Image 1 (cartoon, rainbow, N blue to C red):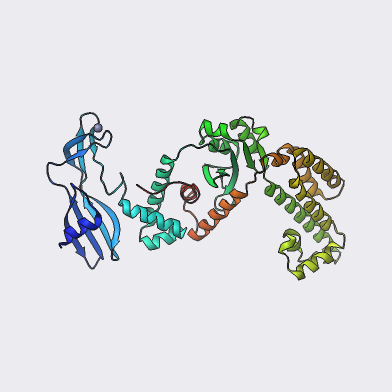
Image 2 (image 1 turned 120 degrees about the vertical axis):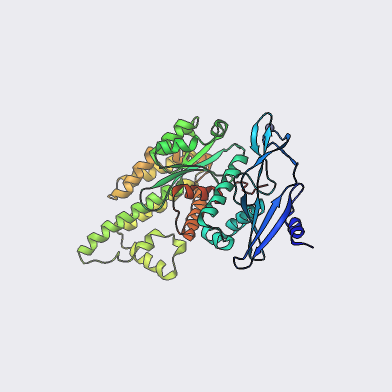
Amino acid sequence: MQETEFYQQILGLKQPWFVADVKLDPEAQQVDVYVEHPEGTSFCCPECGKACSVYDHTKSRRWRHLDTMHFRTVLHAQPPRVNCPEHGVRQATLPWAEKSSRFTIFFERFAIDVLLATQTVQGAQGILKTSWDETWHILKRAVARGQARKSAKPMPRIGIDEKAFRKGQNYITLIYDLDRSTVEAISDGNDTESGNACFSQLSQEQRDSVEAIAMDMSAAFVRSAKQNIPMAEHKIVHDRFHIMKLASEAVDKVRRGEHRQLKSQGDDRLTGTRYLWLSGQENLTDAQRERFDRVYKQELETGKAWAYKEMLRDLWHHEDAGSATLFFQDWYRRVIHTKLTPLKKVARTIKERLANVVSYCVHGITNAVAEGINSKIMSIKRRVGGYRNRENFKTAIYFYCGGLDLCPQ
Ligand SMILES: [Zn+2]
């Protein structure tokens, strides 16, 4: 069998295309495969599918294909252009590659599989022997393909959240579909406008289909939800993990203040106890647990703050919003009469937004799904070693967390 026929068969090339020549460059470890079609062949107009005669050819182009035994394999051809009576001069569709891709469909599919399996762009690059730009080109095309195919499904339970991009005050806003655990929209920043920009990426039907929205207590997201989702005030559920995090931070502030004060009097009872107050009791070793019990019995302000924080957990264990509200009012009265300033601040914040905290009893949603996605994003980002720019960061989020159908047909 001649190598041209061999390549014709393993490439799966169909009529009218055939392999005219194969060149092997052992030094460069490369196989170049030249593909042609017979003269007088007609091709279909990419717009209407009408068979048209060839108008001319563009200059020779190359597509990276799957390697042949470790040898980089490159397809070469001159794409024909047809002159459709209706659509004018157009490049005919090529069976081995999508329009404007530098890779064959086979290669793109393989690259997407590798990117998904390795979960890192750099890791995939090493296996695929592609450049940084080429790899991102594949990722971007895959995301664009997936988004074009995606139908706007109803989203009864969503979450809106912010995410730091690199370090510092550089944020993006994301909308999650909590039922499908996917990222559905991303915008720059974390203010009301950012929220609006995210909501505007959903269709009107999708926005109307929203029954519940999980979010932190930021006023910006509350505002944009109200501007974009009908009756949002009855649908917002402030994320309970976010609220508990605020309460934990308040306990830590109490501890820091008290520790400073005690130390100035030569009292180091709170030295090295930060972890004990911040981690769940179930995560403590026996020794840590003993230490905790000893400090807790001292009746320090920190211990009081911790106890109130623990008590607050029960807010989410009520059957209905009415009894949750009564529970909170009782908790609030106790906390507000203490000297635990940071915790009192949290209590006031919750009180202001109470209806949208106890709405958890009705909707039962949290951004916990989103937290799962967040940690996925963070781990991808860590392993990739940071993103060169924000657009790449967004592309990677959609690629790995968008629930998209990424592969070319
Ligand atoms: Zn046409």
